[in-house]
Image 1 (cartoon, rainbow, N blue to C red):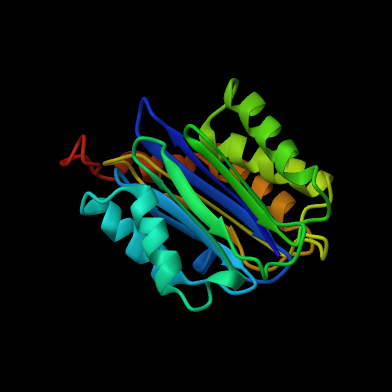
Image 2: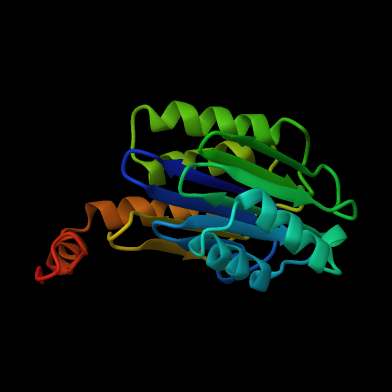
Amino acid sequence: MTYSLIALDKQSGTFGVACATGGPALGGFVPHLLPGVGAAITQGFSTNVFSAEQGLQRLANGEKVADIISSLQEQDKGAAWRQLALMDQHGVAAGWTGDENVPVAEMRMSDGLLIAGNMLANREVIPAMEAAYLETRQRKDMASALIAALSAAQQQGGDHRGTLSAALKVRAPGGLPFDLRIDYAPNAITALSELHLRIEQDGDFQSFLARLPTASYPHRY
């Protein structure tokens, strides 16, 4: 049904989450991010936004990722139908893929990067996402790399139903939110990429961003 990434830039503390699915409006359900604390995804046959939100709050309270995930899975009566993952501010991640998720369902974790998917067209989707993210991140910003990963997934078949919605969140501690979503489009990832490019090239919007306060410059407006 859905394929997603969580990424962390350890130097700046910036988190990024990107996801896409064959259904509409995933942006309000799947990606979750708390700057300076962590990021989460909740997907699968059934999502649980409360688990994602609770997981981030527990990270903020100082609990360890593995303990949080173990507890959430044990408490969730629908855990077998879900895919949920959480990453902390150090890039440590944990998650689970319930047995009732529709194959192909996988989750891959490394330092500062987590990739997960279910109802995937084939087993090449996850490796393609990882390779595209890592290669693009060497040359470009995190948002561009996350979109490149989604595009690579789609080229490998992505969600075998097609892709109708996509979302992207990127934020550094004390920084401005970068939050884009396509709620319904025949080619949602292309639309997300075009929206990203439009924002980057829109002078008026960039001037608007430059006037906004941040934690580093609280009086800037």
